[in-house]
Image (cartoon, rainbow, N blue to C red; front, side, top):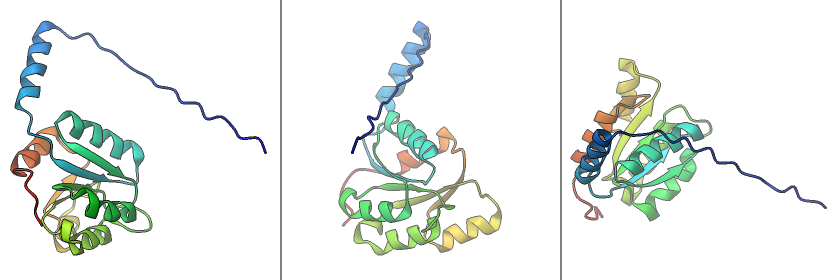
Length: 159
């Protein structure tokens, strides 16, 4: 039986930066928080990977899961300080995923952040009832992400 060879392509876009931008970037990198363990759970791979890349740039140690079940299984080993979790996922939605994470010893102290396209008051009430600490509407604002990271505190174990 013949196997198909998989080929990958990488697209890199480079933009010129001015010396003023370089100074701002170096100042930014000095002021980023120390690495924090962050788990991103979203069935939309593009959304999950984009958020994970941004969090990585902000100085986080990031893992990504594309389903609730995989996300729950990562919590025990990775022990994230923060979990950014989509609500509208197939099979196990974000509400059920949050409940299961909260039942894990490593998930009891993690900050659970709903990151969803749903932003009505009823949606926010449901996320609170499911055990979320915050509710963000996609796309998440970078200033709010930085605020969440800053409020996270140190990397000391929670268990």
